[in-house]
Amino acid sequence: MNFIKRKYYQLLVGFLKFIGANEISISKAKYFLKNNTKLNLDNPTEFTEKLQWLKFNFYTEKYGYLVDKYEVRSYVAKIIGNEYLNGFIDVYDSVEEINLSKLPNQFALKGTHGSGYNIIVEDKSKLNWIKAKKQLQKYLNKDYSKVNGEAIYKSVKPRILAEEFLTQSEGDYIIDYKFFCFNGEAKYVWVKTFHDGKFRNCYYDLKWNKVEDDLNESNFLDVEMGKPENFDEMIEISNKLSKDLIFVRVDLYSIKEKIYFGELTFFPHGGIKRLSVEKFNKEFGDLIQLPN
Image (tube, rainbow, N blue to C red; front, side):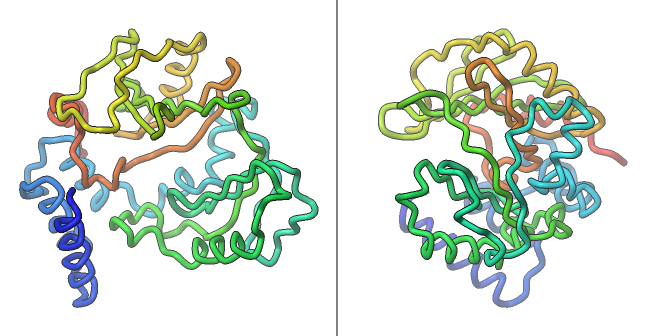
C-alpha cells in the first residue's frame, strides 16, 4: 500500500469510526481498500472472507482465554505440558506494580490483551524505564478488540506479563514457525526471520518444500532455510493445540532444539490481508468448514 493510499485508508477508517459505523461496515471498507475487492460475508469462499465470518459469528468472547497471553499458558500446560512454555516471571495489573529492581538483566514485557504490545529488554542497564513505563501504559489503555473488530479480545483483561528473555545465540535472530491449522491438522508453516537487514518470511509445506511467493513481495525470504531437527514434534504440538478449533495459527519457536510456545493467532493480519501465495486464498478457504 503506497503512502497516498495508506493515508486515504487511515482517514476513511477514522471517519467511519467517528460516525459510529459498526465493525462489519468498517471491516468491509478496510478489506476493499486493502484488496480492491468486496468482502463477501453472505457466501464467503476465500480464506480471509471466512476468517471475517468467523470473527463476527463464531470466535467471540468465550474464546478469549486462548488469546490472553497469561491465561493461555494454562491451556498449553494442560494440552502439551509446561515444558513448552517460556519461563514465567510475573504478571501485573498496572505499570506501578512492576519493580524493575526485581527483574533479571534480560526479560520480556508483553501486554496480555493484544498483539504487538511488547518490550524486549536485552540489557536492563540500558533501558529507559521512564519511556518504557509510558509505552506500557499506552498498551494497557488500548482496547485491542476495536483495532480490527475482533470480539475474541473483548473479555481479555489488560495486564503486563513478564517472561524470561529468549535468544537463539549471540548475533542470531529467533526464527518464528507459524503453523496454519484446520480442525486440528497443520497444513503449512509460515517461517519468519531477520535476513539481509529486514524481517522476511516464506511458506513451507510439511515435507519442507518451499512455496514460492506469487506477488514477489519485498519481504519474501529468498534463501533456503534449514529444516529444524524437531520439525515433526512441532507439527504434533500444533495439531494438539489446534484440536477442535475450526482454524487457528499456532506460533512456535525452536531454540537450540527446544520448542517454545509463542501464541495462538485466530485472525492473521486481522483477516484483512489476502495471502501473498495466491493458491492459498482458495485452498485455505476450502479447508475451513463454517458451522451452520
